[in-house]
Amino acid sequence: MAKEITSRAENFSLWYNNLVLKAGLAENSAVRGCMVIKPYGYTLWENMQAALDKMFKDTGHSNAYFPLFIPKSFLAKEAEHVDGFAKECAVVTHYRLRNTADGRDVEVDPDARLEEELIVRPTSETIIWNTYKNWIQSYRDLPVLCNQWANVVRWEMRTRLFLRTAEFLWQEGHTAHATREEAVEEAVRMLGVYEEFARNWLAIPVITGVKTISERFAGAVDTYCIEALMQDGKALQAGTSHFLGQNFAKAFDVKFANKEGVSEHVWATSWGVSTRLIGALIMAHSDDSGLVLPPKVAPLQVAVIPIFKGEEELNRARIACIDIKNRLQKAGITVKIDDRDNLRSGFKFAEYELLGVPVRLALGTRDLENGTVEVARRDTLTKETLPREGIETYVKTLLDDIQNNIYAKALKFRDANTFLVDSYDEFKSRIESGGFIMAHWDGTPETEALIKAETKATIRCIPIEGDMTPGKCMVSGKPSAQRVVFARNY
Image (cartoon, rainbow, N blue to C red; front, side, top):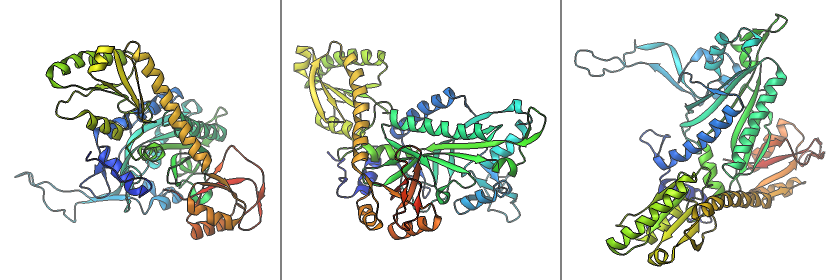
Protein backbone atom coordinates (compact mmCIF):
# COMPACT_ATOMS: atom_id res chain seq x y z
CA MET A 1 0.00 0.00 0.00
CA ALA A 2 0.99 3.66 -0.32
CA LYS A 3 1.64 4.12 3.39
CA GLU A 4 4.91 2.19 3.67
CA ILE A 5 7.19 3.41 6.43
CA THR A 6 10.94 3.37 6.87
CA SER A 7 12.11 0.43 8.99
CA ARG A 8 13.41 0.95 12.53
CA ALA A 9 16.71 -0.71 11.66
CA GLU A 10 17.27 1.57 8.69
CA ASN A 11 16.54 4.88 10.44
CA PHE A 12 14.73 4.90 13.79
CA SER A 13 14.17 8.65 13.79
CA LEU A 14 12.68 8.65 10.29
CA TRP A 15 10.59 5.57 11.18
CA TYR A 16 9.12 7.49 14.10
CA ASN A 17 8.35 10.59 12.03
CA ASN A 18 6.82 8.46 9.24
CA LEU A 19 4.62 6.67 11.72
CA VAL A 20 3.31 9.79 13.44
CA LEU A 21 2.40 11.36 10.10
CA LYS A 22 1.11 8.33 8.20
CA ALA A 23 -0.94 6.97 11.08
CA GLY A 24 -2.62 10.35 11.27
CA LEU A 25 -1.62 11.15 14.85
CA ALA A 26 -0.29 14.66 14.30
CA GLU A 27 1.32 17.00 11.80
CA ASN A 28 3.40 20.14 11.84
CA SER A 29 1.43 23.38 11.98
CA ALA A 30 1.89 26.73 10.25
CA VAL A 31 3.42 27.96 13.50
CA ARG A 32 7.05 26.87 13.63
CA GLY A 33 7.69 24.26 16.28
CA CYS A 34 4.01 23.63 17.04
CA MET A 35 1.86 20.67 16.08
CA VAL A 36 -1.70 19.89 15.11
CA ILE A 37 -2.90 16.81 16.99
CA LYS A 38 -5.29 15.06 14.60
CA PRO A 39 -8.49 13.29 15.74
CA TYR A 40 -6.93 9.81 15.99
CA GLY A 41 -3.99 11.14 18.02
CA TYR A 42 -6.25 13.30 20.16
CA THR A 43 -8.52 10.35 20.97
CA LEU A 44 -5.40 8.52 22.14
CA TRP A 45 -4.60 11.50 24.41
CA GLU A 46 -8.21 11.65 25.63
CA ASN A 47 -8.04 7.99 26.65
CA MET A 48 -4.84 8.63 28.57
CA GLN A 49 -6.35 11.76 30.10
CA ALA A 50 -9.50 9.93 31.23
CA ALA A 51 -7.52 7.18 32.96
CA LEU A 52 -5.16 9.61 34.69
CA ASP A 53 -7.96 11.97 35.66
CA LYS A 54 -9.76 9.16 37.47
CA MET A 55 -6.54 8.17 39.23
CA PHE A 56 -6.03 11.76 40.37
CA LYS A 57 -9.58 12.05 41.68
CA ASP A 58 -9.31 8.66 43.38
CA THR A 59 -6.34 10.08 45.33
CA GLY A 60 -8.30 13.15 46.44
CA HIS A 61 -7.41 15.74 43.80
CA SER A 62 -9.74 18.20 42.06
CA ASN A 63 -9.31 19.96 38.74
CA ALA A 64 -8.98 23.74 38.46
CA TYR A 65 -7.80 26.17 35.81
CA PHE A 66 -5.32 29.04 36.06
CA PRO A 67 -4.39 31.80 33.55
CA LEU A 68 -2.28 31.22 30.47
CA PHE A 69 -0.43 34.50 31.08
CA ILE A 70 1.92 35.01 34.02
CA PRO A 71 3.23 38.44 35.07
CA LYS A 72 6.97 38.54 34.55
CA SER A 73 7.49 39.67 38.13
CA PHE A 74 5.95 36.41 39.39
CA LEU A 75 8.51 34.30 37.58
CA ALA A 76 11.32 36.42 38.96
CA LYS A 77 10.33 35.83 42.59
CA GLU A 78 11.89 32.35 42.72
CA ALA A 79 15.44 32.88 41.46
CA GLU A 80 16.29 29.26 40.64
CA HIS A 81 12.96 28.86 38.87
CA VAL A 82 13.42 31.88 36.63
CA ASP A 83 16.96 30.78 35.77
CA GLY A 84 15.64 27.34 34.79
CA PHE A 85 13.05 28.71 32.36
CA ALA A 86 14.61 31.99 31.19
CA LYS A 87 15.74 30.65 27.81
CA GLU A 88 12.44 28.89 27.05
CA CYS A 89 9.90 31.64 27.77
CA ALA A 90 7.66 33.29 25.22
CA VAL A 91 6.96 36.87 26.31
CA VAL A 92 4.07 39.20 25.45
CA THR A 93 5.26 42.80 25.36
CA HIS A 94 2.59 44.68 23.33
CA TYR A 95 -1.07 44.54 22.47
CA ARG A 96 -2.47 45.44 19.05
CA LEU A 97 -4.82 48.40 18.77
CA ARG A 98 -7.97 48.08 16.67
CA ASN A 99 -9.22 50.86 14.42
CA THR A 100 -12.84 51.05 15.53
CA ALA A 101 -13.88 53.06 12.45
CA ASP A 102 -13.38 50.33 9.85
CA GLY A 103 -12.47 47.31 11.98
CA ARG A 104 -8.95 46.94 10.61
CA ASP A 105 -5.98 46.12 12.83
CA VAL A 106 -3.38 48.84 12.94
CA GLU A 107 0.35 48.32 13.33
CA VAL A 108 1.68 47.80 16.83
CA ASP A 109 2.05 51.21 18.45
CA PRO A 110 5.24 51.59 20.50
CA ASP A 111 3.06 53.26 23.11
CA ALA A 112 0.79 50.18 23.27
CA ARG A 113 3.33 48.35 25.41
CA LEU A 114 2.01 46.36 28.36
CA GLU A 115 2.68 47.92 31.75
CA GLU A 116 4.20 44.59 32.74
CA GLU A 117 5.38 41.93 30.31
CA LEU A 118 3.50 38.64 30.43
CA ILE A 119 5.07 35.19 30.20
CA VAL A 120 3.13 32.59 28.23
CA ARG A 121 2.78 29.73 30.70
CA PRO A 122 5.83 27.39 30.62
CA THR A 123 4.60 25.85 33.91
CA SER A 124 2.25 27.28 36.51
CA GLU A 125 3.96 27.20 39.92
CA THR A 126 4.26 30.97 40.18
CA ILE A 127 0.71 31.97 39.17
CA ILE A 128 -0.75 29.18 41.30
CA TRP A 129 1.26 30.04 44.41
CA ASN A 130 0.26 33.67 44.07
CA THR A 131 -3.34 32.41 44.05
CA TYR A 132 -2.87 29.98 46.94
CA LYS A 133 -1.85 32.93 49.11
CA ASN A 134 -5.52 33.98 49.05
CA TRP A 135 -6.83 30.47 49.66
CA ILE A 136 -4.73 29.47 52.66
CA GLN A 137 -4.87 31.08 56.11
CA SER A 138 -5.25 28.18 58.53
CA TYR A 139 -4.23 24.54 58.88
CA ARG A 140 -7.92 23.82 58.27
CA ASP A 141 -7.44 25.02 54.65
CA LEU A 142 -4.84 22.30 54.05
CA PRO A 143 -4.08 20.26 52.12
CA VAL A 144 -4.90 21.94 48.81
CA LEU A 145 -4.88 19.23 46.13
CA CYS A 146 -5.37 20.74 42.67
CA ASN A 147 -4.65 19.51 39.15
CA GLN A 148 -4.81 21.46 35.92
CA TRP A 149 -5.22 20.12 32.36
CA ALA A 150 -3.66 22.75 30.12
CA ASN A 151 -1.27 23.70 27.35
CA VAL A 152 2.17 25.15 28.01
CA VAL A 153 4.73 26.91 25.85
CA ARG A 154 8.48 26.34 25.98
CA TRP A 155 10.21 27.95 23.04
CA GLU A 156 12.06 24.96 21.67
CA MET A 157 14.05 25.47 18.47
CA ARG A 158 14.72 21.80 17.66
CA THR A 159 11.36 20.09 17.72
CA ARG A 160 9.90 16.62 17.08
CA LEU A 161 6.22 15.79 17.07
CA PHE A 162 5.03 14.79 20.57
CA LEU A 163 8.56 14.47 21.95
CA ARG A 164 9.51 18.14 21.97
CA THR A 165 7.35 20.97 20.65
CA ALA A 166 7.07 24.65 21.45
CA GLU A 167 3.52 24.12 22.68
CA PHE A 168 2.25 20.88 24.19
CA LEU A 169 -0.60 19.54 26.29
CA TRP A 170 -0.14 18.23 29.80
CA GLN A 171 -1.49 18.03 33.29
CA GLU A 172 0.18 19.71 36.22
CA GLY A 173 -0.69 18.98 39.83
CA HIS A 174 0.05 21.59 42.49
CA THR A 175 -0.48 20.78 46.14
CA ALA A 176 0.03 22.56 49.47
CA HIS A 177 0.59 20.81 52.82
CA ALA A 178 1.06 21.58 56.49
CA THR A 179 4.23 19.53 56.96
CA ARG A 180 7.31 18.45 55.08
CA GLU A 181 6.40 14.81 55.64
CA GLU A 182 2.95 15.21 54.06
CA ALA A 183 4.43 16.94 51.01
CA VAL A 184 7.11 14.30 50.48
CA GLU A 185 4.46 11.60 50.87
CA GLU A 186 2.35 13.34 48.23
CA ALA A 187 5.25 13.62 45.75
CA VAL A 188 6.07 9.93 46.18
CA ARG A 189 2.38 8.96 45.95
CA MET A 190 1.99 10.73 42.61
CA LEU A 191 5.16 9.12 41.33
CA GLY A 192 3.46 5.82 42.14
CA VAL A 193 0.37 6.90 40.21
CA TYR A 194 2.52 7.62 37.16
CA GLU A 195 4.37 4.32 37.49
CA GLU A 196 1.06 2.43 37.74
CA PHE A 197 -0.36 4.28 34.73
CA ALA A 198 2.74 3.60 32.63
CA ARG A 199 2.72 -0.09 33.55
CA ASN A 200 -1.01 -0.94 33.57
CA TRP A 201 -2.32 1.39 30.85
CA LEU A 202 0.58 2.19 28.52
CA ALA A 203 2.23 -1.24 29.02
CA ILE A 204 5.58 0.49 29.51
CA PRO A 205 7.92 -0.76 32.25
CA VAL A 206 9.61 2.17 33.95
CA ILE A 207 12.31 2.74 36.53
CA THR A 208 11.32 5.04 39.38
CA GLY A 209 13.98 7.19 40.95
CA VAL A 210 15.29 10.55 42.07
CA LYS A 211 17.03 13.05 39.79
CA THR A 212 20.52 14.33 40.53
CA ILE A 213 20.92 17.99 41.48
CA SER A 214 21.91 18.95 37.92
CA GLU A 215 18.83 17.22 36.46
CA ARG A 216 16.40 18.48 39.10
CA PHE A 217 13.40 20.68 38.26
CA ALA A 218 14.18 24.39 38.66
CA GLY A 219 13.06 25.41 42.13
CA ALA A 220 12.57 21.89 43.51
CA VAL A 221 14.21 20.29 46.54
CA ASP A 222 13.85 16.83 45.01
CA THR A 223 12.59 15.61 41.65
CA TYR A 224 11.22 12.08 41.34
CA CYS A 225 10.83 10.54 37.89
CA ILE A 226 9.83 7.55 35.80
CA GLU A 227 12.29 6.60 33.07
CA ALA A 228 11.42 4.39 30.11
CA LEU A 229 13.64 2.68 27.53
CA MET A 230 12.78 3.10 23.86
CA GLN A 231 13.49 0.50 21.15
CA ASP A 232 16.51 2.44 19.88
CA GLY A 233 18.16 2.13 23.29
CA LYS A 234 17.58 5.73 24.35
CA ALA A 235 15.85 6.73 27.57
CA LEU A 236 12.76 8.89 27.77
CA GLN A 237 11.71 10.77 30.89
CA ALA A 238 8.03 9.87 30.99
CA GLY A 239 6.86 11.79 34.06
CA THR A 240 8.10 13.80 37.03
CA SER A 241 6.93 14.59 40.55
CA HIS A 242 8.62 17.38 42.50
CA PHE A 243 8.97 18.04 46.20
CA LEU A 244 9.22 21.83 46.23
CA GLY A 245 9.87 22.28 49.94
CA GLN A 246 8.88 25.80 51.03
CA ASN A 247 10.62 27.58 48.14
CA PHE A 248 7.48 28.83 46.38
CA ALA A 249 5.60 29.42 49.63
CA LYS A 250 8.41 31.71 50.80
CA ALA A 251 8.67 33.44 47.42
CA PHE A 252 4.93 34.25 47.48
CA ASP A 253 4.58 34.51 51.28
CA VAL A 254 2.03 31.71 51.58
CA LYS A 255 1.60 31.06 55.30
CA PHE A 256 -0.89 29.30 57.53
CA ALA A 257 -1.65 29.34 61.22
CA ASN A 258 -0.95 25.89 62.68
CA LYS A 259 -2.96 24.25 65.48
CA GLU A 260 -0.99 26.24 68.07
CA GLY A 261 -1.72 29.47 66.22
CA VAL A 262 1.88 29.87 65.03
CA SER A 263 2.38 31.15 61.47
CA GLU A 264 4.33 28.81 59.15
CA HIS A 265 5.09 28.60 55.44
CA VAL A 266 3.30 25.73 53.72
CA TRP A 267 5.05 22.83 51.97
CA ALA A 268 4.53 22.15 48.27
CA THR A 269 4.62 19.64 45.44
CA SER A 270 4.05 19.75 41.71
CA TRP A 271 3.87 16.88 39.22
CA GLY A 272 3.07 16.36 35.56
CA VAL A 273 3.00 14.25 32.43
CA SER A 274 2.41 15.44 28.89
CA THR A 275 1.59 14.43 25.32
CA ARG A 276 5.21 13.23 25.26
CA LEU A 277 3.67 9.97 26.52
CA ILE A 278 2.26 9.43 23.02
CA GLY A 279 5.82 9.51 21.70
CA ALA A 280 6.85 7.06 24.41
CA LEU A 281 4.02 4.73 23.45
CA ILE A 282 5.04 4.75 19.80
CA MET A 283 8.76 4.17 20.39
CA ALA A 284 8.30 1.52 23.07
CA HIS A 285 5.91 -0.79 21.21
CA SER A 286 5.42 -0.10 17.51
CA ASP A 287 6.97 -2.05 14.63
CA ASP A 288 7.72 -1.74 10.94
CA SER A 289 4.09 -2.37 10.03
CA GLY A 290 2.86 0.56 12.08
CA LEU A 291 1.56 1.41 15.52
CA VAL A 292 1.15 -1.21 18.23
CA LEU A 293 -1.24 0.22 20.81
CA PRO A 294 -2.20 -1.25 24.20
CA PRO A 295 -5.96 -1.93 24.13
CA LYS A 296 -6.61 0.14 27.27
CA VAL A 297 -5.70 3.39 25.50
CA ALA A 298 -6.22 2.51 21.82
CA PRO A 299 -8.64 4.91 20.07
CA LEU A 300 -10.28 1.87 18.48
CA GLN A 301 -10.02 -1.62 19.96
CA VAL A 302 -11.70 -3.72 17.25
CA ALA A 303 -12.19 -3.22 13.51
CA VAL A 304 -14.78 -5.46 11.81
CA ILE A 305 -14.27 -5.92 8.07
CA PRO A 306 -16.80 -7.64 5.79
CA ILE A 307 -15.26 -9.35 2.74
CA PHE A 308 -17.70 -9.37 -0.13
CA LYS A 309 -18.31 -9.40 -3.85
CA GLY A 310 -21.25 -7.31 -4.87
CA GLU A 311 -24.08 -5.58 -3.04
CA GLU A 312 -25.93 -8.76 -2.06
CA GLU A 313 -22.94 -10.28 -0.22
CA LEU A 314 -22.21 -6.93 1.43
CA ASN A 315 -25.74 -6.70 2.78
CA ARG A 316 -25.57 -10.24 4.20
CA ALA A 317 -22.17 -9.58 5.76
CA ARG A 318 -23.30 -6.24 7.14
CA ILE A 319 -26.09 -7.89 9.15
CA ALA A 320 -23.58 -10.27 10.79
CA CYS A 321 -21.12 -7.43 11.40
CA ILE A 322 -23.77 -5.28 13.08
CA ASP A 323 -24.66 -8.19 15.37
CA ILE A 324 -21.00 -8.59 16.35
CA LYS A 325 -20.61 -4.84 16.86
CA ASN A 326 -23.62 -4.66 19.17
CA ARG A 327 -22.38 -7.54 21.29
CA LEU A 328 -18.88 -6.09 21.55
CA GLN A 329 -20.19 -2.66 22.51
CA LYS A 330 -22.34 -4.19 25.26
CA ALA A 331 -19.11 -5.73 26.58
CA GLY A 332 -17.58 -2.24 26.79
CA ILE A 333 -15.37 -2.61 23.71
CA THR A 334 -14.89 0.17 21.14
CA VAL A 335 -15.60 -1.18 17.66
CA LYS A 336 -16.03 0.02 14.09
CA ILE A 337 -17.42 -1.68 10.99
CA ASP A 338 -15.45 -0.83 7.86
CA ASP A 339 -17.81 -1.56 4.97
CA ARG A 340 -16.32 0.89 2.49
CA ASP A 341 -16.96 -0.52 -0.97
CA ASN A 342 -14.22 1.39 -2.78
CA LEU A 343 -11.27 -0.31 -1.03
CA ARG A 344 -10.05 -3.90 -1.16
CA SER A 345 -9.95 -5.86 2.07
CA GLY A 346 -6.16 -6.21 1.87
CA PHE A 347 -5.79 -2.44 1.91
CA LYS A 348 -8.04 -2.24 4.95
CA PHE A 349 -6.04 -4.94 6.77
CA ALA A 350 -2.81 -3.01 6.20
CA GLU A 351 -4.46 0.24 7.25
CA TYR A 352 -5.60 -1.15 10.60
CA GLU A 353 -2.15 -2.63 11.17
CA LEU A 354 -0.72 0.84 10.57
CA LEU A 355 -3.21 2.35 13.01
CA GLY A 356 -2.36 -0.21 15.67
CA VAL A 357 -5.93 -1.43 16.18
CA PRO A 358 -5.47 -4.34 18.64
CA VAL A 359 -7.99 -6.77 17.10
CA ARG A 360 -9.29 -7.16 13.56
CA LEU A 361 -12.30 -9.31 12.71
CA ALA A 362 -13.03 -10.33 9.13
CA LEU A 363 -16.12 -12.06 7.72
CA GLY A 364 -16.17 -13.61 4.25
CA THR A 365 -18.74 -15.74 2.41
CA ARG A 366 -17.50 -18.96 4.00
CA ASP A 367 -17.65 -17.38 7.46
CA LEU A 368 -21.27 -16.39 6.88
CA GLU A 369 -22.12 -19.98 5.90
CA ASN A 370 -20.17 -21.56 8.77
CA GLY A 371 -21.02 -19.11 11.55
CA THR A 372 -17.36 -18.20 11.98
CA VAL A 373 -15.16 -15.10 11.99
CA GLU A 374 -11.45 -14.56 11.39
CA VAL A 375 -9.70 -12.98 14.39
CA ALA A 376 -6.34 -11.22 13.89
CA ARG A 377 -4.30 -9.73 16.73
CA ARG A 378 -2.05 -6.75 16.06
CA ASP A 379 0.65 -7.47 18.62
CA THR A 380 1.69 -10.83 17.14
CA LEU A 381 0.23 -10.45 13.61
CA THR A 382 -1.34 -13.90 14.02
CA LYS A 383 -4.88 -14.91 13.17
CA GLU A 384 -7.34 -17.75 13.72
CA THR A 385 -10.88 -18.68 12.72
CA LEU A 386 -13.40 -18.99 15.55
CA PRO A 387 -17.18 -19.42 16.04
CA ARG A 388 -19.10 -16.15 16.05
CA GLU A 389 -21.14 -17.38 18.98
CA GLY A 390 -19.57 -16.00 22.15
CA ILE A 391 -17.06 -13.91 20.21
CA GLU A 392 -17.58 -10.93 22.56
CA THR A 393 -16.33 -12.98 25.53
CA TYR A 394 -13.34 -14.23 23.55
CA VAL A 395 -12.39 -10.75 22.32
CA LYS A 396 -12.66 -9.23 25.79
CA THR A 397 -10.24 -11.85 27.12
CA LEU A 398 -8.04 -11.44 24.05
CA LEU A 399 -7.73 -7.69 24.62
CA ASP A 400 -6.48 -8.36 28.15
CA ASP A 401 -4.00 -10.89 26.79
CA ILE A 402 -2.75 -8.40 24.19
CA GLN A 403 -2.32 -5.72 26.88
CA ASN A 404 -0.29 -8.13 29.03
CA ASN A 405 1.75 -9.41 26.10
CA ILE A 406 2.73 -5.92 24.96
CA TYR A 407 3.96 -5.16 28.48
CA ALA A 408 5.82 -8.48 28.75
CA LYS A 409 7.57 -7.83 25.43
CA ALA A 410 8.63 -4.33 26.50
CA LEU A 411 9.85 -5.62 29.86
CA LYS A 412 11.85 -8.38 28.19
CA PHE A 413 13.45 -5.80 25.88
CA ARG A 414 14.34 -3.52 28.78
CA ASP A 415 15.82 -6.35 30.83
CA ALA A 416 17.86 -7.57 27.85
CA ASN A 417 19.20 -4.03 27.38
CA THR A 418 20.06 -3.23 30.99
CA PHE A 419 23.71 -3.78 31.87
CA LEU A 420 25.81 -3.78 35.03
CA VAL A 421 29.10 -1.99 34.33
CA ASP A 422 32.02 -1.47 36.72
CA SER A 423 34.77 0.14 34.61
CA TYR A 424 34.68 3.42 32.73
CA ASP A 425 36.28 1.85 29.64
CA GLU A 426 33.52 -0.74 29.50
CA PHE A 427 30.95 2.03 30.04
CA LYS A 428 32.26 4.07 27.11
CA SER A 429 32.12 1.02 24.87
CA ARG A 430 28.72 -0.21 26.06
CA ILE A 431 26.96 3.17 25.83
CA GLU A 432 27.47 3.18 22.05
CA SER A 433 24.95 0.34 21.76
CA GLY A 434 22.36 2.10 23.93
CA GLY A 435 20.34 0.73 26.81
CA PHE A 436 20.27 1.37 30.53
CA ILE A 437 23.64 1.09 32.23
CA MET A 438 23.72 0.51 35.98
CA ALA A 439 27.02 1.87 37.29
CA HIS A 440 28.53 3.38 40.40
CA TRP A 441 28.97 7.17 40.64
CA ASP A 442 30.65 9.12 43.40
CA GLY A 443 27.80 11.61 43.80
CA THR A 444 29.74 14.67 42.59
CA PRO A 445 28.47 17.03 39.86
CA GLU A 446 32.02 17.19 38.46
CA THR A 447 32.11 13.45 37.68
CA GLU A 448 28.56 13.60 36.33
CA ALA A 449 29.50 16.48 34.00
CA LEU A 450 32.64 14.69 32.84
CA ILE A 451 30.72 11.54 31.90
CA LYS A 452 28.14 13.59 30.01
CA ALA A 453 30.79 15.57 28.13
CA GLU A 454 32.77 12.47 27.12
CA THR A 455 29.92 10.03 26.37
CA LYS A 456 26.71 12.11 25.92
CA ALA A 457 25.16 9.90 28.59
CA THR A 458 23.32 11.34 31.57
CA ILE A 459 22.25 9.97 34.92
CA ARG A 460 18.59 9.26 34.32
CA CYS A 461 17.87 8.66 37.98
CA ILE A 462 19.05 7.29 41.28
CA PRO A 463 16.74 4.25 41.59
CA ILE A 464 14.40 4.07 44.57
CA GLU A 465 14.28 0.27 44.44
CA GLY A 466 16.70 -2.41 43.28
CA ASP A 467 20.35 -3.12 44.00
CA MET A 468 21.47 -0.87 46.87
CA THR A 469 24.90 -2.48 47.19
CA PRO A 470 27.63 0.16 47.70
CA GLY A 471 30.72 0.19 45.52
CA LYS A 472 33.31 2.42 43.90
CA CYS A 473 32.75 5.08 41.23
CA MET A 474 33.74 3.78 37.81
CA VAL A 475 35.49 7.09 37.05
CA SER A 476 37.07 8.36 40.26
CA GLY A 477 37.24 5.21 42.36
CA LYS A 478 35.63 7.07 45.26
CA PRO A 479 32.90 5.42 47.38
CA SER A 480 29.46 5.10 45.80
CA ALA A 481 26.29 4.48 47.83
CA GLN A 482 24.52 2.54 45.04
CA ARG A 483 24.37 2.08 41.30
CA VAL A 484 22.60 4.77 39.28
CA VAL A 485 20.96 4.58 35.84
CA PHE A 486 22.87 6.02 32.90
CA ALA A 487 21.62 6.32 29.32
CA ARG A 488 21.57 8.58 26.33
CA ASN A 489 18.21 10.23 26.20
CA TYR A 490 15.60 12.17 24.27
